[in-house]
Image (cartoon, rainbow, N blue to C red; front, side):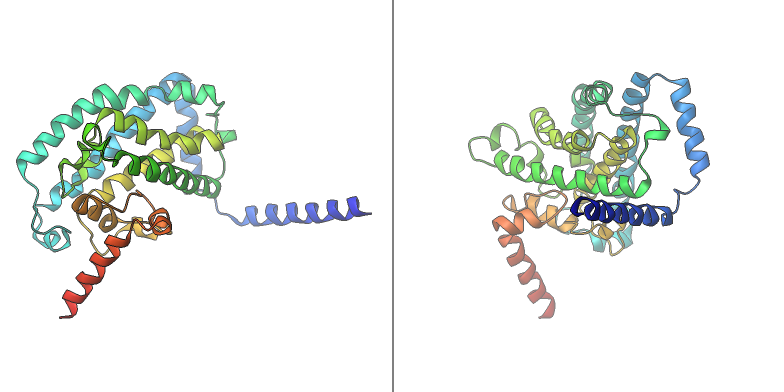
Length: 291
């Protein structure tokens, strides 16, 4: 009787899930997306899709997202949204950043990304359209990837600030106390490897689809450029993300050097009290506005 009762409960729960799943609308232009996806798989090998697709996505998205923030320095109405008003961008810093960034991309980032095919083969990650999870599941999985990556980022980032390690590795990234979008991936090669390893945790856990790897890559690039942009306009689509830390949170880390070690969310800094200086700074700023 107990087994039968448990089976009835599980069966009802399954039907409820199936019903809710049936109410979820398909992705916009699903037929076109499916056709394009299948065309890609029919005309290119898995190696080409994973390798070239991941490299192109990374490079195009990164620099495309950097461009609006680059042009913001020339737009008068955007100047009031610059967080560190006393530290405007300079051509010298931006040119130095771009040169090192290109070297890093060609000799560190792209070679690492070229391992995408071997990563998907090692963990049995499918490419075919039929295996692709529906978009709500991809959204939840992507958010979960961000949670896992942020946990890794907090502890490794905080470790890189240790006085015996900092000057050898992380000091490169902190060369700019007032960050700008393009500076998001300006880092020592070892830091790129150590912090970047957190990106792989989620895809290793879920092993759901190549689409998750790409959607997660897209989100991570949007997030890292946003928090390094140096601007905090009132309208920002990233702010709809629950518990999102935002630009001001990470900008303070560059300005103050200590605290706010998380990248995407705020809970680890709250839990370990490494946001105390940031809270004091916010309170002083609020008091100055009221005076």
